[in-house]
Amino acid sequence: MPACSDCNRFKGSYRPSQGESALLHPYFDSVDGCRWLYAELEETRPPRVRFRIKTEHVQDEGTAARLLAHFRVFKLGDLYASHAGQAIRRLEQRLPKVFREKGASGVREQLLDEAEIHSDGKTNSWGRALHECLAESDWYCSEYFGQSDVPSRMTERPSA
Image (cartoon, rainbow, N blue to C red; front, top):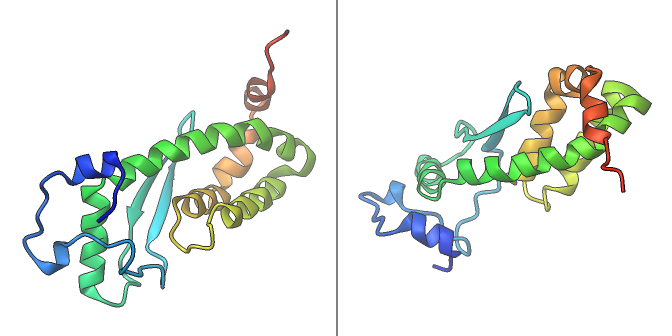
């Protein structure tokens, strides 16, 4: 199955012991019929996000087990968290202005728009999970941006 060099390295010589621990095939396995990828916000400075799989809505137990195996073997939680960190830094360039102009509700609305944009039409994209998680957090939408040092620190530009 085609994979990038990092994924090939993670997969290594992994051999599933049972059918349920088999990895997903990107061309033959459709797993976007229900929501299973979620992000959880850590209220730290800077904010951090962890990704996890919830399988209670996945209809087939075998598919649920394969999702978990795929997530673990390819270390997708770490990969998505790294991408999320970069995305949060980019948001910190724009959201302070949104907060000043429209408050927490404006930040939340912007994040929900970002979730749709970054979903690429997929229910379980890391971008959708990240932005929805941030939008659901009162801490992130109001307290984080409401502190006086955050907007000034984020919007300072080096002098030329």
